[in-house]
Amino acid sequence: MKYRIAFARRFQKDYLKLPEEIQEKTDKQIRRLADGGFSYPSLRVKKIEGEEKVWEASITMNYRMVFYHEEDIVTLLRIGIHDIL
Image (cartoon, rainbow, N blue to C red):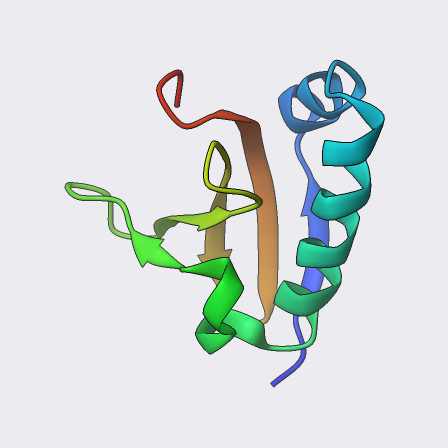
């Protein structure tokens, strides 16, 4: 299943503050997610405890993105270092 990707304003602000190398890796992971990659190994997608439709996915071992998922839409909410999110 393919997903439509939406970007929250906060995600866009976070993204612009990232190093260029992490932005490039993020772009690649977003494409994988859009192509239905919830099970793609490097994304390591998991549900956030206590939240019904909020998930996280890995960019690198240190960077994560948090997103809301409903039907065929994935809304990217935040991106940053794992400890901050």
